Structures are given as C-alpha cells and as structure tokens.
Amino acid sequence: MLLIAAPLVNLYAPLAADPAVPAGEGRSLAELAVPSIALAAGVAVFSVVLGYVPGRLLGTSGSSGPLVFALLLTPLLLPRYVLYYAWTLVLSPTTPLADGLRSIRQWPSWWV
Image (tube, rainbow, N blue to C red; front, side):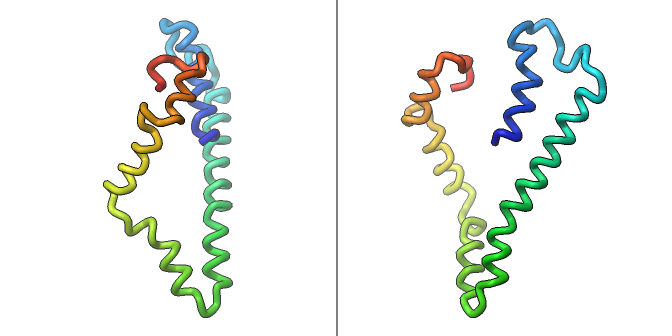
C-alpha cells in the first residue's frame, strides 16, 4: 500500500498547496521517470516475495499437496459480491477505522 500511496502523495501534494499549478509542471523527465520505475520495481519485488510463500508451501507439501492447493485456491472461488461486502464492511464510514481516520486532522475532509 505504501508503494502505491507514496508516489501519489508526491504527485498531488503540490496540487493541495496550489491548485493552479498542474501536476508535474516544472519537473524533468528523470524526476518523473525515476519514481515510476522505482514503484514498478517495488511492486515486482513485493509480488515475488508474496508469491514465494504459497509456491514454497505447494512445492514442499508432499502428500498433503491437494489440501494445500485447495486452501490456496479458496479465495479465488469466492463470489465477487462476498469480497465486495467484506471490503465495504472494513471501509464503511461507521467503522472504528473510519472514526480513527476522521479524528486525524491531517487528512483532508474528502478522504474519509
């Protein structure tokens, strides 16, 4: 999440300070390309690390391989509406998480 949020904050922070300045104005190609390449590399490394654990479990599971495979496949078999419902329960404006985020004065009012 940090790998995605940090470049966006870097891009939109000047807009919050002065909305008349377009994003990226006055920045060289290198200043714009380096964070993008770093973000892509970070996402790639994170994906490999995240996929290594289930791959290692499947590779070393031996006779319990089908059970481990079924457990790893279960989240993919859930209907989309179940995942959406679970996601909205966590991010609903009436949850303790939203109350805590709303109490922080640094966040813009439209964020929460």
